[in-house]
Structure formats: structure tokens, C-alpha cells
Length: 269
Ligand code: DGL
Image 1 (cartoon, rainbow, N blue to C red):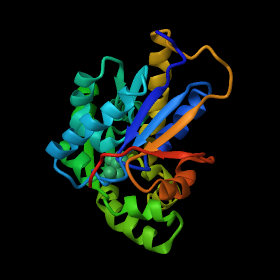
Image 2 (cartoon, rainbow, N blue to C red):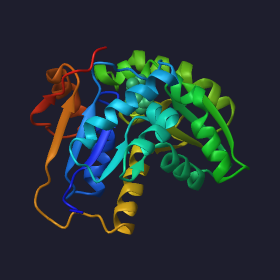
Image 3 (spheres, rainbow, N blue to C red):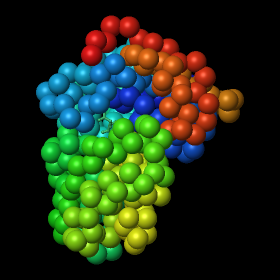
Image 4 (cartoon, rainbow, N blue to C red):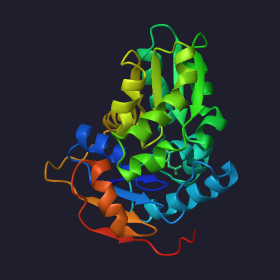
């Protein structure tokens, strides 16, 4: 097995680039193949049955690239379809829920953890159940924040409207006196300034993508699968629709230029 094979990362669209950003920070020499299902985004409001079907197809796109590992960047997919991906792929699969929950369990001092995510992620109770497995003493409080996704894509990361919406969404969590908040969606790391402001900086924010990158690094080391080459890695981006918008918006999520974005045909909305 060649260790220079790429890590495969998939997401419902652009958001997963925040996870790629964390991966490139922790693993600067790994080749990465990304697939964003921009033809069918968002996954958040869709039924778990549909998201599971999509997840299987997204996995197949990555498997065609002979990936050595699959990272499910999308919280919604990780919440409702981790088993689908694991069953289909003969390579290790990492979702964002377990690493995010573990990081939150380590961070909380009062054992009061908030979780924000898409409707699909919140309704699945995936974070709540995982936190309880890790530490049954943790009390978890959830809030779906669907409007954060378009606001982050629009670039309204420091906008009055976003702050107003954040106040609406986060007020119930402040009443619960949480000390830690899981950012359970690919887009939310772009909104940390506003979220921190609304919560008066008194809450530790957990970026699941960041926690996932640390887990991926540990797993690659354990399995002796790190790329031995120290050359500049190849990052390849594939989407199912409108590659030009992905290029424009994606730079903000990735924190660097994307280069050429390929369109994969055959994904109808
Ligand atoms: N990537 C999704 C997630 O992390 C957010 C966007 C969507 O709803 O598809 O849950």
C-alpha cells in the first residue's frame, strides 16, 4: 500500500474546505482529493434516508481516486450515515462527530455542553449520544442554526444581520449556562468571532473539523500510513456543479487559493 495515496475528503458542498484547511495545517505533506456535492447541497434539511443515499454515491467518487482514508467533513453525513461509508469503503473512515465530542468532553469544566448544527445533525442526537457515551455526567443542549450556512457562504461573517440571528439562536443556550459549545457544522468556524461575541467569550468553542484533523493525524501515525514525501502535496478539488462559485467562495473557507476545480458529471439535484 503506497502511503502517497491521497486522503479522500467529502462534504455536501463548500463547507468541508474548513476541514481540509485543518488537515493541511496538521498534515502539510498529505495529498488530498476533495469532493463537494454542490449540485445537491444543502444536506442539513434533508431526510436521513436521502442523505444516506447521497453519502454512498459521494464515497464512490472518492474510491475511484484510490484514497487511503476517507474523512467525512460533513457533520450531517457523519451524524446519519457514518455506517454507510464504513461499509462501502475498505479503507479507514473518520467522521467529525466522535472527535468533536471527545474534544468537548475534554474541554468542559462544568459538564454543560452546547451543540449547534444543521437540522439533520441536531435531530439525529449523534453528538448528544456520543457525549453521553464518553461521559454520562455531561449535560448536552442542542440548537439547530440553519441560517448560519448561507450567511457564512455569503461572507457575512461580521455583519449586523448575522449577529442578530446568532443572538436569537444562541440565547436558549446561554440560559443553560453552557461552558463549551461544539461548532457542529462545517460552516460555523467562519462565524467564531460573532458567536464568541454573542456568548461574551465565556464559552470554549470546539471546532469539530480541527479535532478531526488531529484524529486523522493520530490514525495515520498508528497505521504507519503517513506520506513519506516532503514535497508540496497535491490538493485536488472536485464538485458536482458550478465549479466557478466553489472557486470564488471556497478560498475563504480554505484560507488559500484553490487552483483548478473539476466537475464530476452525473449528479442531478
Ligand atoms: N456540510 C454541512 C454540515 O456540516 C452543512 C451544509 C449542508 O447543510 O449541507 O452539516
